[in-house]
Length: 488
Image (cartoon, rainbow, N blue to C red):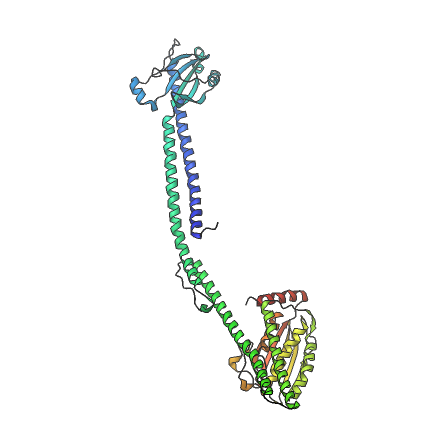
């Protein structure tokens, strides 16, 4: 089950703090318990040493315990401070005990046997319903008359246990209160941290396809939140630009497809109004075929761009000589150029091989030549240059037309962008407006680039650079480029 970031942050911080507090409390408890035990043990040894000296001090061998100078009732009232003393024989018989003991101390026969052997032994026992700690001290150390005697000194542990219980309770309360405080503090801190995120989420949820121009304006006091807002606003700008480009593309495509259909419908309806002679019907059919050709070119160009955008255009990479590709295209276009009074020439230096898709390279060159012929007046010329420059192959298409307006140099490769119609040849107003866009797409698929400029002597210059790249590398790069097109 998923939890909110605020809850997870508070819970994890509280858990970490609780673990630290429990560790500190446990170490403190063990340390204090060890200190109390050392003090009790030291006291037992001191008392045993004093009492052993007292018991064995009589030259006659008579044993006597040094008593507390208090009454029995006073001794009972200060039971927690009492030290019990008793002397045992090697057989476990009670020989002597302090007068404040109303009954014998519990005897541990194993400890008694070890003490008879000269060891000092400590054991835990129960006496009168409470815990005690006993020290078995061998009296044989004070002379042979006392070798069979063992001194037992015992101390009650009630005070020590009460102290430890109170300490455990105090540490538990401190741990719980601190953990609760940590949870409350981290909950508040998490609320402060996620407040900008909630604002961002609220504003982002209000953004729809028709409101992509809006931007996020949440107030933050952290660099991470500012960075998040900046990244999201940048993404919104890209989405807005993409949606706007898509809307323009759809509108332009609809217009380009509707225009030939409208023209064909008008001519066919006009032909049906009355009977016409075969020559007139032939003219209508020829006109309709021209519109069909225009419609076919437009839909073909749209399909090419759509496949490129979707990243499904596969390059058929081969070792291609660009000179030969340009020569074939020039031969195909020469008939059209001659019919329009335009001279077309090829200037190829030779030795311009690249790894590329030959069909796409020829289409790139053809689109550039068609565009050049479109803007070249009768009697003008179009020249195609192909040359190798360092690690690139350059394809230049020059025309002697009116050139490009400075405002169009940056937008000339946009979809359906057209320059001033007055600068276009009247015969070729049927272009789809996608030719140069396809040129740029093909160049990018081959990891190249294309640019446009005006020639000093007049006319326009379009230059394509294609890298001379090994086949395997270009294949992967071309496919990656095709995929990246789909993300733009």
